[in-house]
Image 1 (cartoon, rainbow, N blue to C red):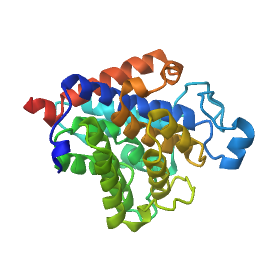
Image 2: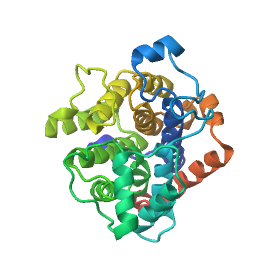
Image 3: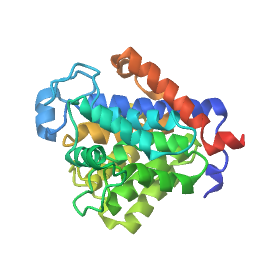
Image 4: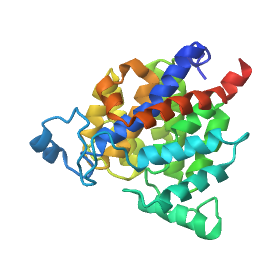
Amino acid sequence: MSAGRRSPRGTGGIVDRARAALFGVAVGDALGATTEFMTPAEIRDRYGVLREIVGGGWLKLSPGQVTDDTEMTLCVARGIVCSSRWDPGPIADRFAHWLSGNPADVGATCRRGIEEYIEKGRIEAPPDEKGAGNGAAMRVAPVALYTLGDEELLSRLAVEQAHITHHHPLSDAACVSVGKMIQWSLLGAPLRDLRAEAEELAARHPEFRFEGYDGKSSGYVVDTLRTVFDAFFSTDNFEDCVVKTVNRGGDADTAGSIAGAIAGARYGFAAIPPRWVNALDAGLREELASLAERLVRKSPLFDRA
């Protein structure tokens, strides 16, 4: 760990960035849902460059309405804060309750894993060579906040929450890498450290190399993270990062939510366009802010303070 990551920001700054990470998930989701499954050419023809949360899309959402990316992230966060110690059971219970409500969108791997839990009580999906989707990485932000200050704990718990539905080495690696980038951003790490983490991921799993990015954004976790990394490392502010991400189309809501989490942690809450924040439901805004602070205050970093 570099010296830059050993010197955390003040308490207020960390809480602010933690809040921005969770809000980043939601606004990235709400913006990207409009362009999900569209091609870049289709987006250009219809929107030019999509910069506003307008709803619509294949799900015909209301402006500011979120999808499974935010909803499952909330399940993880709620499951953590309601427990006195780490336990994936309350998270799985919330996934089950959420699925029983017939959500507007749910990925096939997530659905299969949750149904297995409902029917068999199995908290860990079996290894699946086809399970390298992005549905676990999209909801890892609460785990990153909860384990702040202990990277080994992050690595273990990020994978445990993933395995409720996804059990694949690329999904596992993506969850840990996204979690580290969120944590290091919260602590004020320089951009070179975040780039080094992305490069370390690619060194272990060459599929994630994003130099010469081909523009493909799909539900495959490799495509998702390559899209996010390309946007994050080629922009210098929250709005441009998320806009560039979702205008790639494909699985734009998930890519947008992951980009939003990392960029929110890096740039802070004030960097999120107020018009995007205000597009979200007021109750959702209140809960995101509360959950973010509760999660980081339960973290090892705050326990040592």
